[in-house]
Length: 97
Image 1 (tube, rainbow, N blue to C red):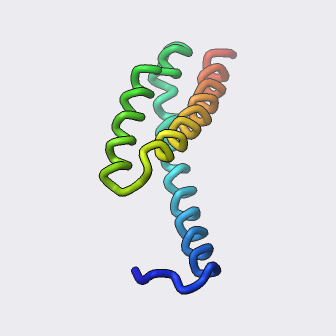
Image 2 (spheres, rainbow, N blue to C red):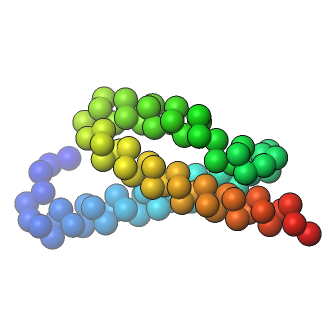
């Protein structure tokens, strides 16, 4: 891909990437929702050991891909927190009733 020739082109490319990211996040959400069905309690949903393993792997992948590891970690922690809250809401809803 050639270098962008204007700020408008940069923004357009970022918008295109954002569209792809949203589609990937929607796929991730479906998997998170599926995982909720296998977890028995809130600790299993929060899975702090799993979170730290994911973060370590993401930092390594980020570095290899040329993405700042601290940026990747911040993004993933925010994403994991948001999905954990969604999963907890779904999990609590399925255990009530």
